[in-house]
Length: 336
Image (tube, rainbow, N blue to C red; front, side):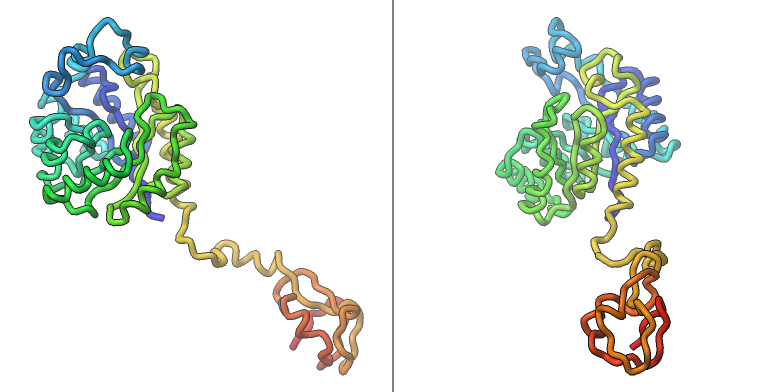
């Protein structure tokens, strides 16, 4: 199995602070993630004044302020993005961000992002899909809240806008923070693979507590894992409580790396390290008692014992009734 691509989702867990955003990059790099991802938007272009908060946002930040006021505090300007991009390069981790408007798309394209991430909420927004496709970069498309028909329609928009299907990776996702384990439905990854065989891959964007579900997704063949993380779950803000802390992120990355290595190539054959144990663990056909030359082999004068460096017991039936070509002492390996 190829190495799983791990995206550490910082999102808006910087709380509008550039210093905190830089520290999030350090945490992602220290954990061994491949990329760290933020969110890029202008609040007024994303949310109308009357838009309500999601229930999880109300639980985390209260209901007194509007969604618009909440996310306005979480914006980062162009200078901040340039600083973050440079810091990612210095730390050896890819910078990426999810854009939510046309200006943000252009800003991120100018910075030289390696790919674009389309969040689940924009899957039914053809204007956004066309703008992303026009950039000509690979796309990761989250599919939370979507059915197969909506995913097919989104892929059709991307293709019609010039993005070949094999440049899009689908991310299975459940859009709830945190996601109840009973609603994860990891088997939907297999459904996506079967329904859309032309895509670049199928991965998983996780919102469950802990690291168990991302590890399971990696074991099921996810090519990409995305997971929210924070410096401290007790910080104020909408997404901190549903995020991993740095030590947990590092544990998740280690686990996924081990799983990727363990998945192998699917060929069932002795591995290099176990070949040396074949002679130790298997058995050979041996004389159960003294056998004279010309005596016929029987179940009474033969036995099978370790080591397995002689005739395989799988030849037992073939040996029955054959004449011994020489004398054998007890526990001496039989020869054909």
